[in-house]
Length: 345
Image (cartoon, rainbow, N blue to C red; front, side):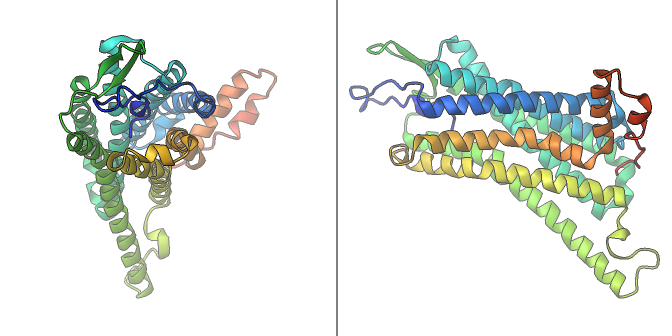
């Protein structure tokens, strides 16, 4: 369910009794919460991008760096496109930016969300290959670049219909203009099918692929554990059969995927309910709709936090930046924070 498409659902049967929406107290709380998320997500994801691009994050294995850069870039798109658009649109209530920006921003919003989901799929596929086929690591760099390119191109193609479906619609009797899909579908089921298609590409397919990858990883780890207990492993036992750096990266990616599922599942479930029963808007409190969308955006803030918890190099870059702003600190105190860590694979 689009965050603002429900602001104006004009049909031939309801024009006479339709009343324009207002900037309600629930929407005001939504804007304030989104603003706080925007500030944190912008700062943390920019710091992550700088760390991996120019800082100590360059110590990551060459095939991991593009993955983290892509994830940070997708989160920044969510931060600088989806969040400001949502805040301004809730404040103005109606659309004042014209038909061209209506189409463009609708495309960019879906493109950002789709890219974020597909990047997590690529990360899951990379971890799957790293654990189940560790000998293929020599080709991981080229493979990941190809998968990321495919993910971004496919995201653009999936989001491209937004350029033709969304348009500005004006209610002359109320002098009210909105950016909606009204008039692009001849029947209700067509719009529902279109929304379900995006639900499948944004949530269902990524969730299935990620679940399959990590299920196979767990099965492989369990198999190696049984081999170890049976005495078939000569040099490693337990989780030590997998290098610690690789296991650490695996744990990090699992938590990143879990945060995606936890943050967005309630919002998508609400969307399914709305697509099949639009009258649910009348029976559910308004703040529920706002709360679930804000909770979904929380995922953009989680990724850099999770990465920081598992990556000392990122924390060292943050410490160095803070010490630059406090010249009285001793340089030696920073050196103690910047311990070298083995490259993740």
